[in-house]
Length: 217
Image (cartoon, rainbow, N blue to C red):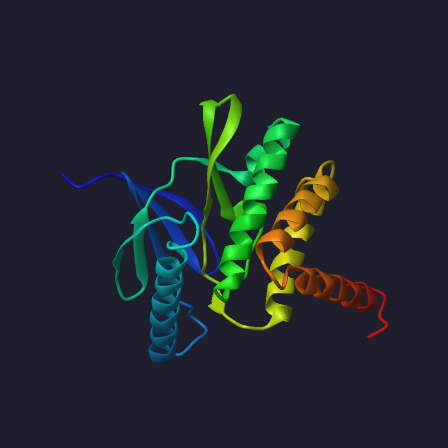
């Protein structure tokens, strides 16, 4: 008997479908593109994301890739808490634990030239020890959605990853944003030899953004 499917999310690029213990990420057709070009781009992007997931799996926790089809990745479903929904309710001790572990994990990705491309608290799933209503200790942080991921040796690309995370923290978790990012950055620079250089570039990226907002660029 086929397992029941449930659509979890519909994005501009893909549909996420929960099916038992599996998750299907199906890239959607873009009507404004030529059909042949659209199919080619979706196939290429699907293959690239699956390769990044496979490489990242040797460094950090990610959903295991089970099957790759032309425009679809079938992977394991992670039954945890999306960090954007859980972070504010965690105790300060667990928040710091998450920040430090995340800093070390991102350092591992960047050390291997993997750029997430959309590093926000909405693309991280955490599992914890203890009751769901009162997590006591962090178990794992899973990185999800490498749909915008790529390989790069550029400091700028790493800086943008960190900038996106910081912006997400300030937007969704403003009460703890500075403290959380400080703990993250401390662990990141300790774990990645070019970490201080990346953080310095991140501040440059933020400055350029502020100038653009004021119409000075």
